[in-house]
Length: 380
Image 1 (cartoon, one colour):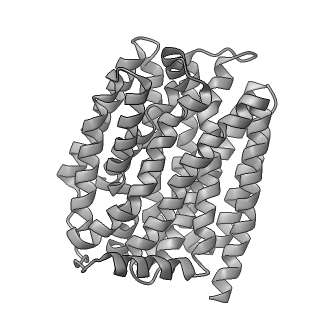
Image 2 (cartoon, helix red, strand yellow):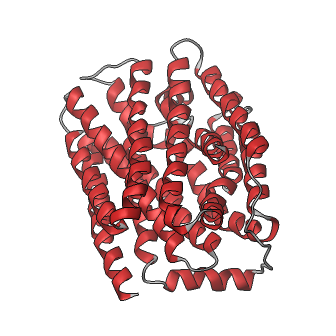
């Protein structure tokens, strides 16, 4: 329950602006690619802060770092909707990304220490399920509210909900039972990171996180622009309902984690990536029912892949798991930032077809990496 609340508050804080990117474009007079920086900068600075946050957790404790992160990120969020300029909003979102880093940087290591190995896949799946609901709520709340109030108040409501979940996490998170503080230094940290980077079983998973998350964020960054325009011409509230597709991720992440515990991670990971590719293809025609089915499959496949890959990192890292998890998440959020921002270029030039080709190449790379993960595991 506590980690569910942590996922809710953090992922609401990360993505509450995504549903209103078209409104930011209109209000501040910026292009879709520039508007997407309100998401990309946040995840980019989170990526930069992931490794320092994990190092702090080795010294000061998992729970302490997660609690401070959740409370600080949600509190600063309540001020950002009233930013006087787009530049101020971007600066605040960058700071919020840094403050958000503590929860995702530490949660996987916390679960790996506290949960029995045979049940780790299931526990990781439940945590990822909580993050999907947080991402969903962060997009739905402002999306629906924007039809009744200004975009500023729509964002403010989402930020207050995020703050409420941060307080719940603070109150109910269990203390660590198996954590022991470790001495940390730049030299030791660098050695641990390089050790993980040399691990042939971990490297493909790090790159997989980069390409899949980058493709996923690209699709959701520019989907709203497509649905608001011809031939769909949907309302803001109707566009917000598309984010209900995140519920497919809530189910698939939990189920994929359990299935991976039973039949093996590589098989489940490959099927999940193929599901993403098939779903993406269905979004290309200008036909709403097909697009919605495609988004359902694409979203379910992504969260299943993320659940399996993140659990695999924790299982393959025999020690210094916080650093291993942080490297995975560094690539995950760096992909969100860099690949998501660059996705505005094919969208501006070629529309949705450009996005589909761009993301399709990334998912194909992910498919190759899923097979490479199996080979690396056998080699190891």
